[in-house]
Structures are given as structure tokens and as C-alpha cells.
Length: 324
Image (cartoon, rainbow, N blue to C red):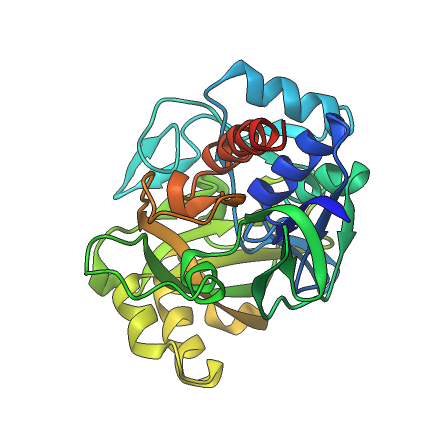
């Protein structure tokens, strides 16, 4: 029997599992997909390495930086130039107007999930369908354990726990997002040499975040420019259930206007749908859970990478105390 089963191989779940494994507990992580890191996601597309989840991140605490440097390949952590993110025409030092430096991983931001998983027992492509009890053990499907850690998005976690739908405003609020890649001929096409990313906070723009991956070292091959677009919330809600052929041409028009791109240079496009992309309102105090069941990740901590990593560590401490 495992001491702990962690559901979900996102950053919080893997961080929690790794910390408990290092303390000598027998831990198993169950992940429904083939990849690690959850929304810290990277795709190899047309030979280019493209971050289509977490595009970049900040580091506020030395403990997070020290942990990254301990598990990552030396030199993989890289800093974007200050002022490389533009919001309404004004350079910013961080994606949300903060003052910290902004970072990425040269090999792809999903490298963090892979690094965290190196010392953890992970079973991929396992979709958890039920939680229960058998005598003194928790059951995750047919697997017994002493404690369970749930790191999936809260709507999926609540469904597994068979929790009643809470009143509006009492559960973490998740926002969906439509993400798209656009490949153009030419290196640093249009005005992309001026900035890594541009934020358009207006709901009616179609774009919320657009970035040129060429600013990340060794990401884009040949004489090409690759752009990642995260659509605005209004646009996403309008087209969430639509085929990409319905909305990619519209996003393309917004992108080409914003980055002064020549439409004749378009090479290829790709679309991805995130149903649970961001947490607008995390809830540190979640509904009461059964003894031995814990929740970690963006539901209590929010969507920033450092925040979910920290919550994974804190959850490991709580689980260790429970296990004694």
C-alpha cells in the first residue's frame, strides 16, 4: 500500500510528491495525460519549441530560485530582458505589472515538470474515476493508500469528491482560454524585435497576451518567427466550443495588426483549448475535506508558477504531519 497517492502531475502535485518522497514516504502520482507539468506546458511544433501554457514566470523568493537551480540543468534558467513585455504601449518588467525580473527555461518551460518527476513514481495515462474507503485505507480507483492529494483543477476535484455545488463566489473561479500558434517567414517578423510580449487588457481586442518565442534562446529554427496568442476572455467564451477554423482567422487579423505582420508571410497555425486556464479567485479556505484528503495547486494558491510550487511544498508538510 502506498503512503500517499497524488492525483495530477502538475507543478503543485509533483512538488508535493517529490518532497514527500524525499522524506521516505512511498508516493505514487497518477496523471491522465502523457506529459508532466500541467499548464506549465511546451510543445515541439514544426521543429520549434513553443510554450503554450506558462509563457514566463517571476521568482520572488530565494527558496524557489534555489530549488530550481538544484533540479534544473545548469544554465537552463534564463531571464528575459527588462522592459520586454509591453502593456498598452508601455514597457513593464513583469507580465502583470510587477517589479520582479521575468524568467523562462531555455529547453522549454515543461522542463520543470520533467525535472520534478525524476525522483517520483508517476503512472501516466491513468484517468482517476473514483475515490472511496476500504476499511482504514483510502481508495483511488482500486489503489489503497493512507492519504490522498488532489492537484487537479477544482471542478474536477469537487466531482471526484462528490461535493455539492457551492454557492456562487465560494469556489475557486476558473477561466478558460483559447491559445494559438502562428508561424511567419522571416526572423523577428514585423515589429517583433521590439518586445517579447504584448498585453492587451481590453476584452474587445480579441487578444489578451501575445508573445514572440524568438526572444527565447534556441527556440525557433530557421528564418521563421513564432507567435503565441492567448485570446481575451470575451473572445474565448464566444468561440470555446467552436472549431479552430472559425476563430483562427480572427485571431490572425488581431495578431497581424498588433505586430505589424505581413499576412502573405504566414506559414502555419495551431490551436489549443484550455478549459481551466487561470484561477481568477483562488480560495485558500476550501470546503471541509475527509481526514487524509488534501488539495493543492491553483485552487487554493492561484495560477502563478511560484505560488503553486510553494503550495505543493506546504501541502507536503501537512501530509507528513498527518502521516506522523
